[in-house]
Length: 246
Ligand code: SF4
Image 1 (cartoon, rainbow, N blue to C red):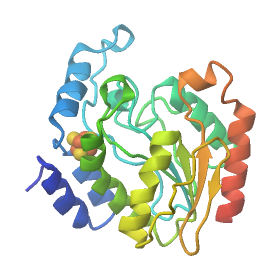
Image 2: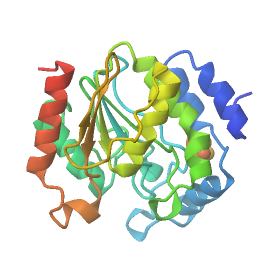
Image 3: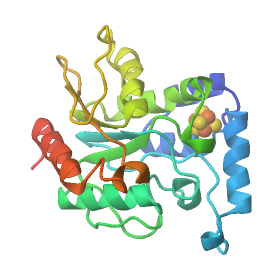
């Protein structure tokens, strides 16, 4: 079976993904959420005027970064005209501009921009992925869509588990998506009550990756000054310290 058509297919296919390359391919062939499949394809068909001459990816967007990453950055979902257009996470939109500039300042990316899948960007010690792999209308996946997509995230974390030390959750949605990972991948019972998300929030447990909260790099936050480059630099400095990355 090449494509995942149901949430049950996602569970089965994620489970048998042998490595990240296999997982990335399987994610790209997922059609398990009818509403999101319709939306990602509609956006790819209609396109934004500025990108009218481009072929949109219009598929789920896999993670990015090396298999021995010590830092993971967990986002919400791809942007309709960003990752859903270029096929690479946080690539080709304003959120990505801010994120990759910060990763470059931190020495975790080889270049400060991320505009297209073939632009030469590489990450060091860092893997970026989203809790939901398809662009959702209004950036709001439903709880059922979040749950259907979770096995991809869980398997991805499992595959980088040997080196993973820190997870930076971009926004409250990603922060909340981490607790099921703790249970599924690490056999850890999430703390009760759940630690509250905030910028700079930090949770750690024995033998599991530390969790750092960071405001999402959305335009809503960066254009208003709620999230500044200095605040992002602080988060990545802490992440590197916790992960033992130079
Ligand atoms: S959101 Fe996830 S589970 Fe749903 S279709 Fe996209 S990749 Fe598949």
